Length: 114
Length: 115
Image (cartoon, rainbow over all chains, first blue to last red; front, side, top):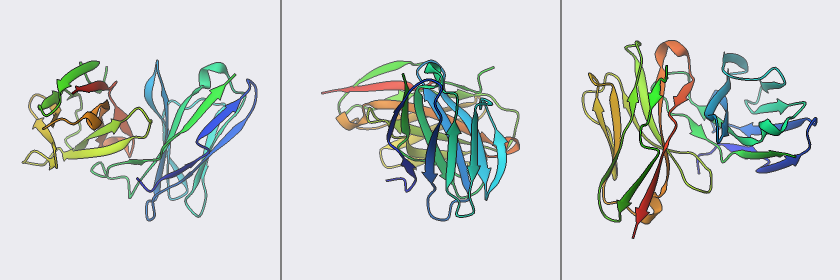
């Protein structure tokens, strides 16, 4: 068990809808990361937060947004969903931003858009 | 250009034998970390091993070792005494000091362990 909690585990929704994915980092970890894993794109970095502030942005669509709350949990909001958004979404956390700190991943949320 | 390259989409190994999964990387940052993760069919991402760019010795964690060749920019994962439970996708990844915190992944290698 990595200590990172993601909910829900599975999500099935229709095109055009909006969903929220939730993540609780490991105790003591200040950094939260969101990744998208799809068959054609592999593991893509979306966004990182550190202690409530956005730290780095990757290939995140404008329809997607995220935030990290004062208690350090994070939410990823996906709106105007398209079929191509179907993927496994991972949250990860780390103690800090040092290049030598491993990221610890949650079990993921599998999103299916129909 | 790909930052992390894993050239073996799939590999087979006999149970109890050792196997090497290849990973090459590209960076101009002198400070970086290299990581290997395992993803079983159940989907979770499990951290296996870490090697820092300034580490003089190869990292080891139980049956996992990392063959770090800095001049060649390679960081191959060696799994000794393969077990059936080692069947999974394996990802090589890198964090660069000048890129903040993000971890960049390779495309992965699917390892199948035969009984």
